[in-house]
Length: 230
Image (cartoon, rainbow, N blue to C red; front, side):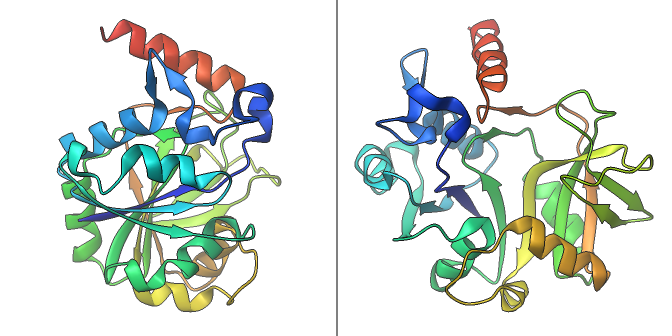
């Protein structure tokens, strides 16, 4: 199984911490966040990684190298201008398998990758979104599901039936990248809406909360979580 990690964001909410380093390199207890991410993925059976880089991405490349210290094969796709989360996948298309996972570079996710992939392969859809029944606890809920499909998704226009939040791990068939325009900024949010319109976006519920370091509060919570696992 392959995971594309979207690590090209500018991390504007972390201010001073990311002035001279990418968000993935923020240290928690002496280790870059990306190290925790990769170790969690490795324990989950993931061996093949594509890192989609942007903002100061060379620092990530120097630290991680070819991935051998994580017992992984890691390759890189670097953007010279911001392409957005979906645009970064489009740029990395030549490196991606016919079916692959994605996750964000600031997310720490407890996903059973084998179970998610088995479910995805049993359905005939272009993509899968992992969701968590959030009830606005960890960020505002932004997703409604109906049956086994995502019915609504919006970061800004919330409705009462949105009990779920996008968890942060997704599965795509490579052919879904055909919905992304070439060489321009395009977000996964936009791609999700296209897939929902076509009834091609499966929902897969995850029961355990996620952690993220994209905000000062999220970083504080993740530090607390890691301290509690010592």
